[in-house]
Image (tube, rainbow, N blue to C red; front, side, top):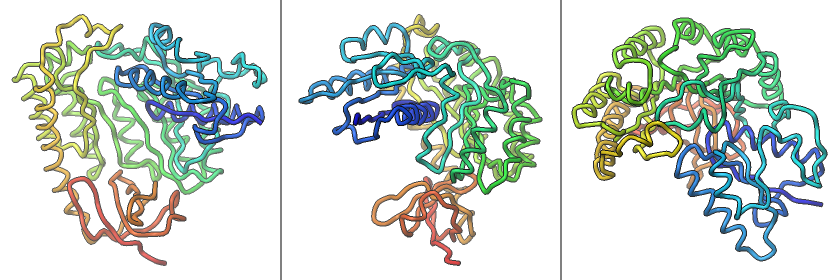
Length: 411
């Protein structure tokens, strides 16, 4: 009996794809095993970032060094040039879009799209792609070249997958897309949110990511009314300076972004707002960066995913001089992190003494369980590991800039 292991590098979309690979393999009689006991190891990877490319190569080399090395397969979101680079380290490099037609002796081919292969759910969180690809062509990003142009999935297919996930006990549904706002297969994204909201069961709905250029009032209205739609929003800013935004090919201004935030916070006062930022983009001078820091202080983000710019081949920005030193990029990152830290400490102070519904996500150290509130705040508390994947009521007893501490309310 063949044994397989899937190693996932990349975003939430890659996690969903790994679940589909697992189901397809097990339909063909393979058994899941730890990497060191597997006959077949699949690296489901992403070459969108250079750091991920480096990890793929290193991991493959280590696997192949082992005595009785397994068959190693590479798949995922990959540039053609990266496939050629990786070829010496893998037995097979296969297109994920052709998963059901992979030409391997232990698999029976099927005539279906890879997204029509049901995922093997092993978590209480279901990541569900609503679209693939991207049409935005930001100057620093290779996603359109890796994943192709944007294609929306059928609404019926998305809802069916969400219903199946809830029936199997999932407590959290993430709707995924490079830009969920531009979803448009039979219905709009706000309409898709409402359809998901109407699924029977006790679960939460989150989505990522949204693009400021087409974030609509209708989305805000649906989020406000939804009972299962969580007060959480990731809205990438990337830069707070209009000149840098233009160089990034981000078709909005910092003023437009502020207006969206004002509307969102007015409709959903307690919303958790996260953002994505690139520091040290080519041409970013100190005054440009100060504009980003200013909007950080004004908007008071709950968290920010801060990346130090690194050149990536096949992008427009790759041709621009990388004018900011690594040391300066780190300094700018520290400044933004400190602003976030200050604001989060102030926000978290208001939770002390309150009771919160928490979805338990994992077991931590020293008997702690780690979960999230509906508005996406981390909570740590003592409790049995059997609670992982369940909703519990927690009394918040303490806080820090990065999370909350609490006590399980026994019923």
